[in-house]
Image (cartoon, rainbow, N blue to C red; front, top):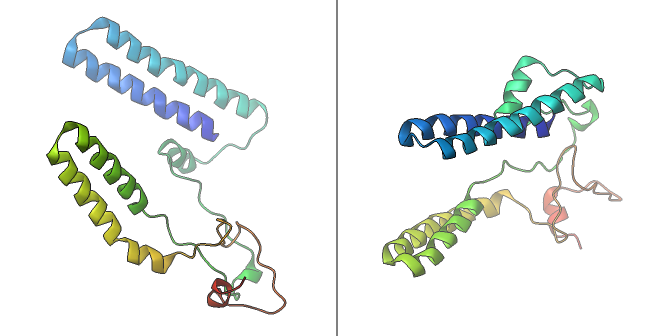
Length: 173
């Protein structure tokens, strides 16, 4: 299953579930039909995309890989080449939720200037918690001057005349 088909199927499932809940909460036909259209349209497009993918000879994913794609999880990483196992390679840590939390806190904080002091206090709290997590993030990440990431199997390749550790790379021009 392609990424596009998985996204369309998730939108379709959301629209169908929202239509069912909306009908039982409101008994209003126009909104229910609109949500059903939201569910059926992308669902049809997803089934068409899956059919075209199979017709084009695309690989058929195992069942659990399909479930992972529908849940929005990436495919499992393939094993890397054996010659990298002994090398010291910089590995990027897992992504962090705290930059998103900081952005959410700023959004709540600025909305508080419109709706009231309680949102300002809540936004300041979220920003404070997110900034409190910054020292742990600063130790785990190395920001490169050109903004790229370095890791096993992706990112730019570091070429040097002699082997270098990540600490030596941090001070390189």
